[in-house]
Amino acid sequence: MCGGHIINISNKWVIAMRFCEFRKKEVISIKDCKRLGHVCDMEFDECKGCIHKIMVPGCKGLWGFLTDDSVIEIPYCCIRQIGPDIILVDI
Image (cartoon, rainbow, N blue to C red; front, side, top):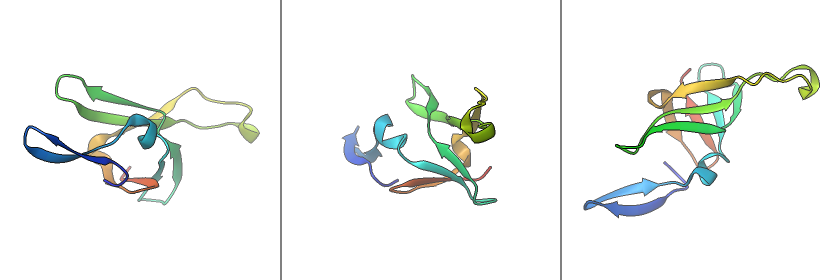
């Protein structure tokens, strides 16, 4: 992960990232190099503190006027790499 902050949790050094930093990253599929958009939401296990999935906005209509309120849900296991500007996913 890039762009996060290194912190010590229970004597383990981990990289932490705030959601405001995470949502600035563009999500790109490695299967077809398609730009999926930026992270708009995420679902996580509040007890374990683990991310289950990230969400990006769904399809836009004609010239962006007609919109679909759906989102693309990407399981965390499909995230292949998180870079300084992009998140590569295998979907």
